[in-house]
Length: 83
Image (cartoon, helix red, strand yellow):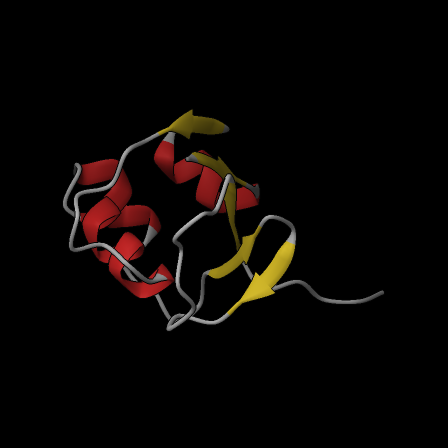
């Protein structure tokens, strides 16, 4: 699946996107974030406060317990403000 990172998440990870194949036990957005945190210092920093980072699966906002099976793209971004 393709992962896309926006704003300070992108800056902390050090890339705008990547293609990954998560291990079998990674089934939800929360699981994916947990797995990503273990991939290195930059990911641990980007997802240090997982409750703040938002996710979208195939361009639809997703909660941490949302299943990721069948997703072609998952985007991660900080909370947005209007203006």
